[in-house]
Length: 342
Ligand SMILES: [Zn+2]
Image 1: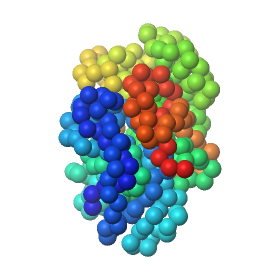
Image 2: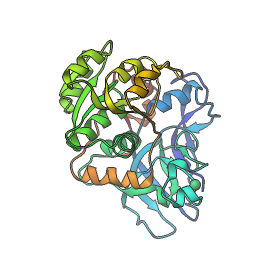
Image 3: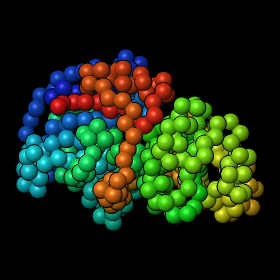
Image 4: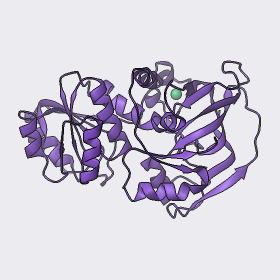
C-alpha cells in the first residue's frame, strides 16, 4: 500500500536545496484496493522538506515533496468515500497491521514514516493514499488552512496534550515562536486555557506570537531570567524544537517539577545539559514525534471548536522553489502553502 503521487508533481531530484526540485508530469492510474485517489487542492511545506532537498535526510531521489495536503476524493474502490468528499490527509505512513498500529500507537510502528520523506508526498495533483489516512476536511477552513494544519498541529497536539499534559491555568513557554509547530503550540495552549509565553529572535515574530495569544514575549538570548520573573519562578511546560541554541535557557525556565517537551533540534543534534538542574528540579524531559491517528482526530475536533492554523503565504505548485526559499530564509510566520488546483 504505497503512497503514489501522480499528475503534476513537485519532485526532489538533486540534493542541492530548492534548486534541486523540479515540476514533473507523472501518469495517472486507478486506485488499487485499500487506496483512495484524492485530487489535491492545497499542500503545505514543512522544515522537513528543506532537509530533504538539502540531502540531510538521506532520502534517495526522486521523491515528491510535502507531508501535508487537503483535497477532494476522486475515486475510492472500497466505497467508503464518495467522489467529491472533501478530505485532509493524516501525514503518517505506517503498516496499520502490527501490534502497535492495532493498539492505536502508529508512532511506535516499526514502519513509521512521514509522507514526502519515507513515501511520496502531497505536492501533486492526484494522491493515492490508504483509506485510513483520510479524514473529513474540518468545516470553516479554507483549502490553504486545511493543508496547513496536519503535521504541525498533530505534532504540537501530541507534545502539549499527550506528552506534557498541559492543563488550563498552567503556564507554557514556547521557544522559537516563528516555526509552524511553535505557532501551532501557541494556538493549542490558548485553546486549552493555558497561559502562553513565547520567545523569538525577531521583533516582528514576537508581535505575531502576541497576536496569537502569547501573553508576554521575549528575545531568544538570555530569556530564562525574565521568563522566571513573568511566571513566579518558572513555567510548568517548555515547548522546544530549537535544541542546543536554546536548551540550557529552556531548562532554566522550568519550575520545580516542570516538563520540557521537544520534537526537533534545528540548531544541531548534540546538546549539553546541566544534570543537577534536571534531577534536583524533578524535571521531565519528553521526546515526541508526529502523532497517532486518534490524536489527529482530537485535532480535527478542536478545529471544529475554533482552533485555526496560521497561513504565512501561498504559492502556485509551479513556484515550489520560491516557496522553499521563503522557508529557507526563515522569514515566515506559520505555514507556507502550495496551491495545486482551484
Ligand atoms: Zn504498524
